[in-house]
Length: 257
Image (cartoon, rainbow, N blue to C red; front, side, top):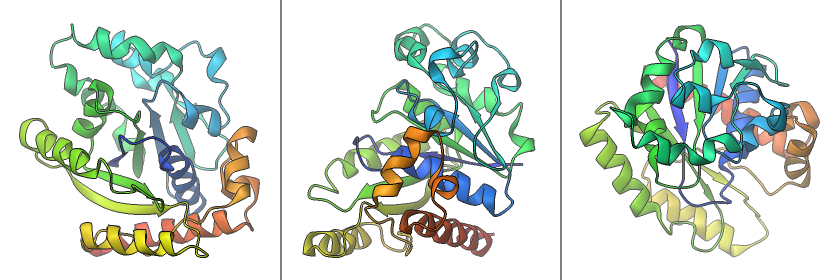
């Protein structure tokens, strides 16, 4: 049975999709079977893993709104051992359409139940908002992985994010917990990055991964080729950081078990 993890931060530009793509690819590289579920209408995880989002016959939209079995929407990605359920702009109107559906917050959870036994980990890439799609992601998951960028205002909105997690835990998903916090866009040359790391560690006591993702040009280039950094430039600092994160992630999972 898969462990289902939502990668979520309602603040945009924090490295959320970058973490989804590259952590999934790094874990796949270590022999784990991974499914990425893209529920962001921007579809960046979809294109970043080599799927043409402008030319999809079926996407997660069909699973959520039209009841199509997710089994029919699974694509093999460009990364080894990583499958993806893609998203595209069709999903943009789904928030409104979901309002009409009974138990609308649990549609994704019920859909994933039909395929979860095939994978070791399922990562859900949420939109950067606190709407119904994100609530579906949180309701379907065992835990939340929170990416935070090492920049000014890094913790802005985090209390709102935590309130949302608490509400979902209370009303929809009592199992939900924080998987961990990934610090991204770290620049060791600046005092600010170092201060942010300290601040985040104080806020999320014991939940921050020691593997920190640096600012890296190759990391920024990789999605435009439809590749993870592991496949695009395995010797880059970005690839090394995500491989370290994957190994730490697996170690933490084993410790908790």
